[in-house]
Image (cartoon, rainbow, N blue to C red; front, side):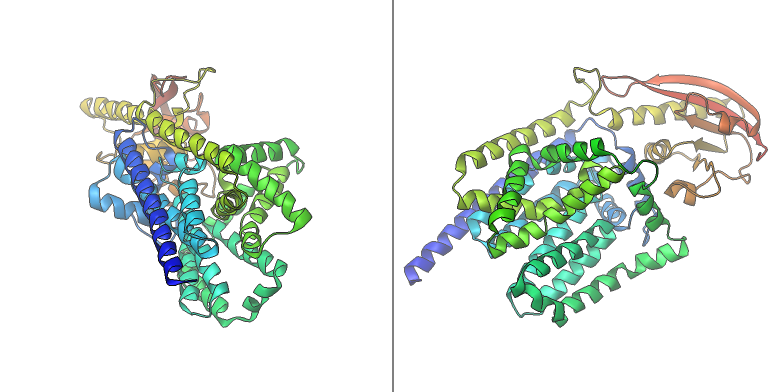
Length: 497
């Protein structure tokens, strides 16, 4: 390559890099404005993560600790409002898109990397995820960082990619244990690629694993102290009991991937997989397919055996985005690529706008799509009103008792300035969520308590008190759809039976 050619290549790379940065900046600005103006309440998982963040630890009942650390950091900077709880989500997704760009540039060129970075940022699943805070947000970032490090580890003899890989895997495990699938994908690639088998005897790979193990060790220690609560919950989520033949569930999971990844891109992934089976793939494509396909296949089997939410294969779409975009660029499929971008960008804008107007519209079926993120503030206000009435009557409640994780989480968040403690009802000897583990109702609570229940007849609780009086039933709006029915009981004289 001549000096002129190199200069032209540098200018081209710079133009694509600038295009990506400006596009991601505009998308991030849109998402931050939508978050600030959002009409939604926190979803109860988000409220639960906020409550975890009030006591930073190395572990929690259902998830590793990184999500709580993220929320702790953001709320320390700007407060406890919904915007501040969620604000790291669009920021981290933007960083993930930049890492996708770096990986694409390393494997192909800056143009492919930039288009893949923008494609990832506008995936339907990412556009939904950018409006909430969830464990998938840091998981995808550290998966993308680990993939970039793995590509460099395979291509160079430097030690720093090993250090980066170890940190990415270790912090990824602290985000969500699903990053363990990364090792499976790496082994699939090594098995399929003779030139990569040197990694099996490469000391750098084992140093990376040691670093990852060291970073997850505090969470392992926390689980040891808490009877492996997080591991047990993760295993329970698989629900391997009852019928083990559920083809409808598997078909629903696969169909959902057209929505998560986008119909054109997922169809492209299927076509590329078929082509790989018949004709083989270039090495860079083979690497990406190894980090995309195995997880989708394993989770599809899980769905067939039991169930699998659509987001369980989310990590696949870091590599899948790069693979499909690279193939489209190489095959000059500009028409399909353009259609995909137009569809996804329009959807990203629509989803951002929809959160601002949440609660004002319903689907043709009459269901409000945001129902699960609406009405919780009203629930807290109704609960505070019951507390105030009892206090003014001279019989203040010693505590509020909630019979569901969702209610406990939402009351903890929306009544965070209340002096009346919120406790969780534990229906068995073994805690079923973090609140039952850390703040259960016990006989030591002296005085009457207020039960807040979404159940039609919570007799399994009211029957264990000498005095149980229903004091109110509220039909609280939860958007434009069906209201949320909440029943309040004054309970006294716990008999423990």
